[in-house]
Image 1 (tube, rainbow, N blue to C red):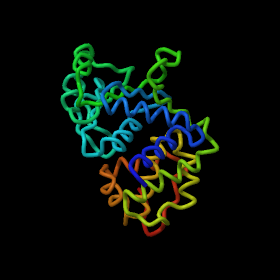
Image 2: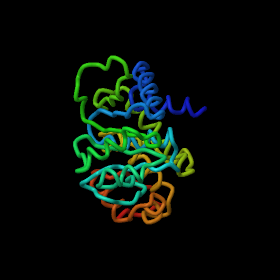
Image 3: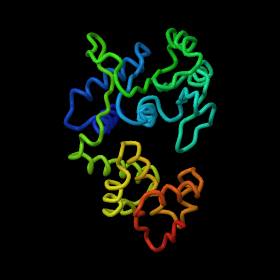
Image 4: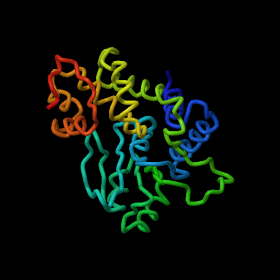
Length: 251
């Protein structure tokens, strides 16, 4: 599958396989953003930063910087679970040169006017804005529409396919056998970890890591997270997924 086909397939997973017009508009919006002629605007429920991060990897690549401007989180290095962040807008912009800068519209930095000035003339930073809803409900007259991510509650008929595709990604990422994500795992994710696309992505990757590791410590190491964090994630979701006996207890 070509890179453009992979991007279209990912957008269809995100926006809906039956909504071809939304996928076409999203591709146009991405093209404008990649050409630095417009910001990429993501709208929807919940935290959209994981989706912006995934789009960055599908377009610019994982080797390019992806920086979140987040005054609350401050300056943090990237981890497997979270992208790098800066609390200061201009510092975030400079760190994002050659890649993407992601901004939450509800959490703007104190130096936002200075950041806007830098972005206005930039041709080496893709700006992604995550917003709960459009500030102007009228459809744009010239530019393609922002990417509006529908809530999973409206996509119940596609939920099983979404889970299966994220499980396939997890199996590929961890070089695991197809049998490492079971029908029981699929049902568990659907019932206990499918509030958002980001939740599904996280759950499928963690379950595949647990299934294919000797113990929970090994799974956590492969995921780049602390074993206590993985254990707590499992414990917070009752009933916890049934683990194969040769993996040992997650306690």
